[in-house]
Length: 123
Length: 355
Image (cartoon, rainbow over all chains, first blue to last red):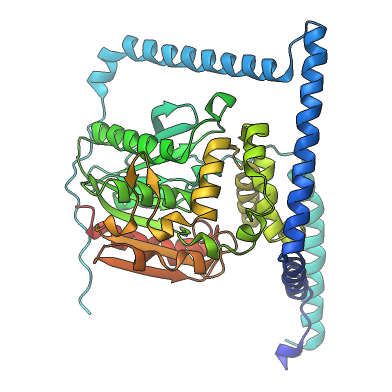
């Protein structure tokens, strides 16, 4: 019977799907317990505490060396991005101002808001 | 065909695909980012993390009421505009809708203090005003996806006087206590939320991505195996890369917003209970009386079906439509199944209500 024939590509695809399903189900069983949730959060809290104390200590060191901290650099970067955005807005506004007469002449007509739904065939 | 010649044909196909895999695998490694979100658009409003786009209409006659897509805050809106031929935006434009989108950029440290109410009582109303100005039409329709649907619901519940005329909620979780593993992992007994927000300021994208990936730990590896198997298939590879890019560009969240969503929505389930307060206004879903369509995915692992299902029972609308489709959280919106199953049903519903 044709159905019994082997088809390697289809078999592979089915194998992957089956493996994915089984692995996800198995993992979700393990991760779906309060014990897992507790350990995960404890690990996360520990990581954050470490990050917090490390960055505070580093900021103190950098400050004593008269150097900017990560926060200072991030803040500077954000200010630069803001300036960049403002410049691009000014550029766009200038471009628009310079091309107004030409644009008005060729401005695309706004579409009419009169469209109606297509009539449905009666059941 | 004899058994022998059938076997020979299968062998030829296998060898051919293996060779193509080798050649195309090199192309895959060498090529850069897949271009996405190519439908022509203008940014009509831009405020830090918030972007409002207007997609350029493609027909001379459009429906009277403009449609605003509200994207989930954790991801980029190009899921609705993956690539030509696989873009819901392109499909809607082709049908004559005037389409706008509220999309998000990564928030900066300055925006760490943005809370849920900033999104629902400032960002959304401001964008609606901008759309009204741009289109010259008072009424608007909204289609919100996932958390974008939650924001839209909160907006609608706190602005029952309008100008919102119709609302479509795509995979929108309203009962957070039915959010499965997410709910368990964000258990208030174990989670030090305040410390997290104070320490990080901005919740990193990796935190969000890891939470999503932990729900289906084998998905990524299985996806790569499928990619290897299908490397000979250009269409598959193109589509895979576009989805992969979308997943890779998960967005960080403002800490305060994350705190509000976790406390108000996840822990206290206040939207479901009708007890959510936003700048003094009660976001009771019963206040929503406009026509509402709820679309949900039966195999959604991010916003589980059980968490999205109760929506229509909570609102005050009488003109409602529930559409439960086979598929997952992402395949409901983009990809071949979405094109066949979801897009036509939603556009049919909206067409009658956009005149």
